[in-house]
Each structure stands twice: as structure tokens, then as C-alpha cells.
Length: 444
Ligand code: HAX
Image (tube, rainbow, N blue to C red; front, side):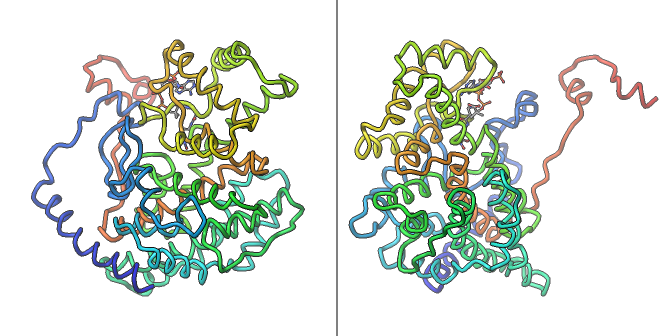
């Protein structure tokens, strides 16, 4: 793929001396302080990672390559008659930092089209899964199975210069991303449509083809483009992005890395929250017997959840301190296309009710909704009601951003990740607490 790869190569040449200079001349400059609460608190907010693909501001939300989401949606080229841009254009932007022309986005679409055929054995692995397996488990395993296809591995074991690692990583990434919609829709048809599968249409773009394989008419193609684009990246520290980066840092190939990131995404505090929102709302709907709850009934339900020691899914965030712009974009789409949808009305009522309750509850640092509070509404409205599939959709989008990060990790030759751990005794000593370790006593 001459154009994108050449452009990427050019950017890599520009970037390498910058990283080299920082490392060699400014390596001892302090970036952040490591306090005990950061060590014990999941490294929350600790500035110890680097990525140029995206940056998350607590108040403004995510920027991809310096562009806000609104700018990304306004600037990226769109298929004719569509509200939402090509997902292929997003990949171009994440990799190069430049807004592609329509032609450049289409070249990416051609590459995906050429690489989309999934090996037969992947389908056999999916078919062999026992019933009731979660679609994220199947998705992760299907990706893992393709480890044997890795071009990077072949090159590595044949002997390749470190500076060239990024090239086979790029090829593997495109090969994998192109196949994800095929794999995901196969899992969907197998789990929920008695295996009745719609073959892909190679003339359609990434989002359009996904909608086609899901058997959905317009505007589900735009829903898919919107979904994949907003879920693609959220800087490096979130569980899925960090997992992908960490695994790839040992020079594991893209299949091992993306499968691992999918496993991180499958946790309820992260990507699975979109499924949890629907499950939680469904419980309320069942309780209401289909009737719309009053505001007081909704408040009572929220308090019951909190008083039972559970979280309100789709609310709160480790970094954001305002309503997630990814939530807002989906809300705006819903207001335009499905203002009377009963589920949207529920979710919109929650937007009014939950933040003041979380503030009164006094624990969550961010009482506002995140991306997962809205994404299920769109899927539900367009007939994808099997909500345990929603995180797979998230995973397709997220794979694009993480692959872009991993290609750049290789390009800038970032090393194996290896922070240092301490014992509780050591932390107590640092804190000046005088205690005798039971563990030490036991050893004596
Ligand atoms: N409901 C109830 N309590 C919440 C809460 C919520 N939505 N959000 C945070 N809290 C609680 C935390 O559980 C924590 O309680 P403890 O002190 O008892 O441990 C306290 O408030 C402080 O947490 P925080 O500092 O505000 O938030 P964290 O950085 O620890 O966690 C989470 C961020 C996203 C995990 C958290 O807000 C949460 O659990 N939200 C609900 C699940 C969810 O929507 N996850 C998806 C987040 C977006 C994402 O990654 N998508 O993939």
C-alpha cells in the first residue's frame, strides 16, 4: 500500500530524532511525582506513558491527533449520502496525523477489501465454542487463533533490523483490522441468527460493509461508522490501550496484543459497561412492566443500586470530569434519528437524574455519563438487541486505535515495559511507619 505506508515512513523519519533527543539529552528531567496513593491507587493519573495518536483532556474529552471529535467528524471525507465519515479515513488520520483526501481514504478501503478474507480455521474455532460463551471470549480467541499468520513473526525469526519492525507490524495490523467486521458478524450470526450469515460486499466501505453483513439498512451504516470512530482511541492509560501496548512491548505480534486488549476491554468497569447499561435498564423495564418510570421511580432505582454497593454503569470516568463528548455525539444522533425511542427516553431521563444523585452520594469524582451510557441505545433501536454483543462492537473500533499505537511503538522503538514493584513493608518504611512485617516474622 504505497501511499499510506510511504506517508507513515516519512512521519516516522521526522519523529525519531525528537524522541532520541528527549531521551539522550533530557532523560533526567522530572515529569511527575509517584506518591503512595498513586502506587496503591492503580497509578491513577500518573504521567508515565507516551502516545501521539490521541490525548484526553479531563474537561474537553478526547482529541485525535490534535482534533476534537467534532472536528474529526467535520473534516474526514464521507461516503456519498452519508452523515458519518469513512472509518478508513480515521485510520489514515491516526497513523499519519493528517486528514486524508477522499482518494486516500478509498485507497485504505481497497486495502481492507483485499485483506478481508478470514482463514477457514477461524470459523471452525468459532463453531467449536460451547453454547453460552460470551461473544467477547469468542472474539478474543478468534483473533488469537490467527497468531500463526503473523508476518512480523516470520520476519523477526528470519532476522530483521529493529528499525524496520514497524513495517511488518503495519502489514499485520491492516490484515487484522480488515478481518474484524467479518469475524464479529460471523459470531453474531452464529450466536443469535442460527448461523444465517450474510457474506461481505467488497465494494462497500468498512462501516457500510459491517452494516450489510449485520443485515441492517441505512442509517445503520452511519451508526457503525460513528461507533467505530468514537471508540477507536482514548490515549494510552485505559485498560485496553495499555494492555495492547504492554503485550506488544515484549514484541508479541498484533494478534497476541489485540486479543489481550480485547480481554481487558471485556471487564465491566471498562468496555463491558455498555452491556451493563442495557442489562441494568432492562431490569428496570421488567420491573415497570413496560411503563415509563416517573422521575421519582428512576431516582429510587438509582439509589437502590448505589445502596446495594454497585456502580451506576455508564457513569463516571477515571480521567474525564465532564460529560463525555462521545456520549454527546451519540445523543445528538439519537435526538435527530430516534427522538421518540422509549429506551432513548429512559437514557435521557437518567442523564437528568443520575449526576445529582452521584454528587449527593459523594464518591464518584465524575458524576457525568461516559460513552457507554448511550451506545447501546442506538444498537437497540436498529434491532441489535443482544446486548452482550455490544462490547464486540467497541472492540472493533478500539482495535483500530490500538493497532495505530502499536505500529508507532515499533516505529519509535519503545522498549519493553517494566515498572518496578515494592512490598507493603517497603511502602510503610517510605511513609515512616514503624511496623514489623508478619511475613518477615514468619520467614524467620
Ligand atoms: N457509580 C457508583 N460509584 C461510582 C461510580 C458510578 N458510576 N463511579 C465511581 N464510583 C465510585 C468508585 O467505585 C469509587 O468507590 P470506592 O471509593 O468505594 O472504591 C469512588 O466512586 C471513586 O471512584 P473515581 O475515582 O471517581 O473513579 P475511578 O477512577 O476509580 O473509576 C470508573 C472509574 C469508570 C471505573 C468508575 O467511574 C465506574 O465504575 N463507573 C461505572 C462503570 C463504567 O461506566 N465504566 C466505563 C467507563 C468508561 C470506559 O472505560 N469505557 O470503556
